Image 1 (cartoon, rainbow, N blue to C red):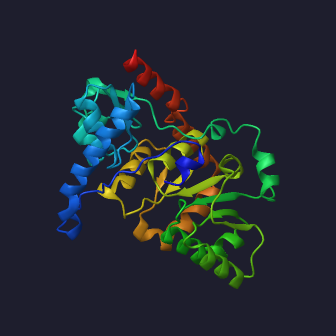
Image 2 (image 1 turned 120 degrees about the vertical axis):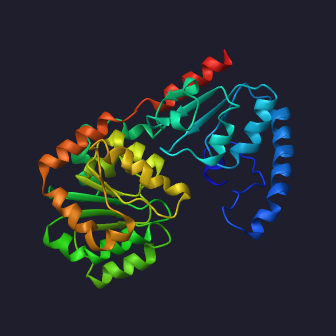
Length: 320
């Protein structure tokens, strides 16, 4: 509701939320929310008169695409994860095309509707060649190994705790760190770094804006396994240790990460084990150049750098 208007586009909210998988007071209002959202969606479709409608899997996609498909408007859904979300599984029978980011998605969707497009990512990471030195200069880093830690915009408690617990090991191994800790944890982690004397080469960020430079500087990445993070890292071609969040529907981050691990394209550390072993695994990988090269080549082979264009092509075909 904030980022879309900032980018110059109008946004209209629907009174809708996910259906809780357990008995909950919130579920009592769910039928009301559905009826309200269907009525509001009908008004949006009537006023806007779209040539096509696209859903990306959130529960807000449900009412709008339900109305659009009922009116015969060409519709597409885009499934970002390796495990299909409930909304997309429900809508799959009604839409004309389903754009996916992982192979073998015919276990969720009709195979004749699937287009293997990948997930759209920011353009500036598609080609990182020649950016390494500029990236090191930007972050005031030297030629020693660089570890990039990505916990998402809100941050990840497990990754932040693992970083603090392993800080001495990283310093001893002369590993530099670009550490994106998230806004919820920034003040706390800043204080903990100060307790260590603000060691040189350990750089803390609430949020990283220059992601192309962060990827270019990094030798190894530690990240959660959200769909867009996985897609970005694949295109950047970085050797990565994924630590899937356990706090997501259907444990889909683990499934995202395993899709790469099963192709020898990434490493996985379980959230519950991360505080004990994550930094050790990272240092091992940083010291193993051959393994880095193997992982980098394998993950880049799975990347879909033209995803946005390929999805648009599918939309244009439907409109025409």
